[in-house]
Amino acid sequence: MQSLIRSSRIIITISLLAVVCQALIPATPGEQTRRAIASTRSTISKIREANKPPRIYVDYLIPLPPETSDADIDPWPGGLAQQYPYAEEILRELLLGVVEDSTPEKCSSQIISASDCCGLFIQESPNAPESDVAALLFPGPDQFDQMKEIERMVGDKRTLLVFNRQFTRAADFGFFQKGEAQKFFDKYEWAFAFQEIACRGEDVKLMFEQSAGWKASVIDENGQEIDVMDASWNTAVRPDYSELEKKINEVIPEPLWMRKMGEVQAKGFKFQRKQ
Image 1 (tube, rainbow, N blue to C red):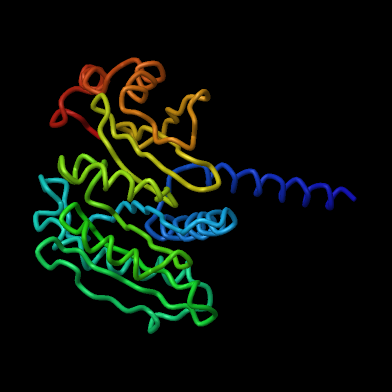
Image 2 (cartoon, rainbow, N blue to C red; image 1 turned 90 degrees about the vertical axis):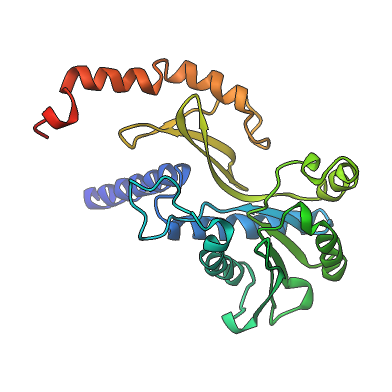
């Protein structure tokens, strides 16, 4: 009986740890991909249940190339052209996980714009045409006409996924197209996002998953994750910069430069340290 109780406690502890770990940002690229697949599938199912065309965004934090060092000012000196092969591999894995029972050979691709490094990928489903998923990689304002054409081709039943978009608002499409762009992208919703921004000099990670909504955390100078989400915020809406800044000031009163100053006073300059 006691062994049964101990086993039950162990199972409960493991389950609680799994929930806690799931609440944190992805620890590895593999975990990010798994969570992106799960969230994307859940989002598509939710949209289908609402009888709407599946139109979704995915923002994936592409891992830095292996040759990157701390001395590099820009880890991607080649820009999108350097990122493209890494992003393509990630996107293919994502599509393969989203489309049930499909295979790598069922994924076709073509370049939409070589100069802007924009590509189109289509993962075909062996079960039904409406289960196919089309994805645009790195689309920007200059591809607006192609995006409209591709959406017509995809139709209302199949999913169109925008992966790591190169725009943030309708105004990016210019004065004369911003109204049309706003109407076009009003149909889209987030399926998954893992983003990083600087706010008050802090390394902030933003995360969206269908099961939890938006989350925000600061990674401090020791690599520790600090939750900076306010309980009153709507998790369906991406946290605003000013809201984040206010919350960070509340949770972490001392700015990074002040904490670094305290570190120098406590340990001395780096060349004087013994550790």
